[in-house]
Image (cartoon, rainbow, N blue to C red; front, side, top):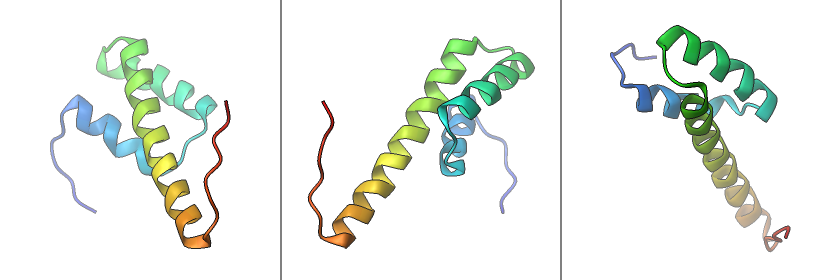
Length: 74
């Protein structure tokens, strides 16, 4: 584990590996925006963006390993 000073964007990016549900992202974003005096919507959007991108990346990797084709929902 490394401890260092981080920008707001880097802090939001850092949450990606927690594999949070949308509900948990909402709860954490509310508190985080309050503590860091940032707009809730900005905090929520960044956390959600990074979290979903990470989850999609891992899911794509799992599908490639399994040999199955990806199916997209419309």
